[in-house]
Length: 110
Length: 111
Image 1 (cartoon, rainbow over the protein chains, first blue to last red):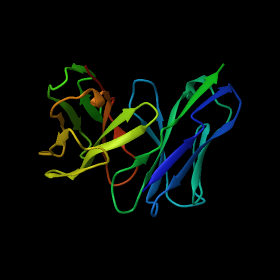
Image 2 (image 1 turned 180 degrees about the vertical axis):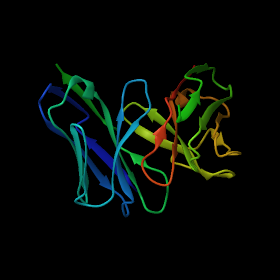
Image 3 (image 1 turned 180 degrees about the horizontal axis):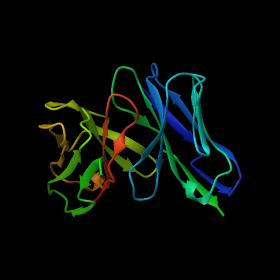
């Protein structure tokens, strides 16, 4: 069965303090690994898709990387507006749906 | 604005009542799905559709029905509400590539 585990559950950073969020997964083949950002009271917002080990994607202060077993979301010099829950999801080749992790709740203090 | 529209945003039901959560998208996406989000459990797939007239069950389909008569609309029906269905429900759609576009959610409380 496809599984996605995110760690840590919660992360508190000071503004400017870089860190990484982890997403480990087991899936029978990987069609894609997705990162989303979710603000309180809102739906998840798409950030990145990664398709193969070694791939990297960047957007502003965020950088996502992928290995055969896990993905990292690196946050460089975060700002308070980066505070949100970050969700990871995997998609297997034989279906359209995604299996989501429980998320990492990031708080960035000024 | 283009996107996924969900209604209502909030709903309180009594146990045993039925209701329909509405979802509409204007991006001409073939794929649509319904998720529920519960604390500590992440998003779990209820039902999905790969096109008009085609639906299938996800991970947690019991107590829910769906239909897809048009590309734009994908309503979720709760047949007989139970307290275990208290949750936040998200509708999502997807095109050929990229990730899902989610609606803003419906917060449902069953008392």
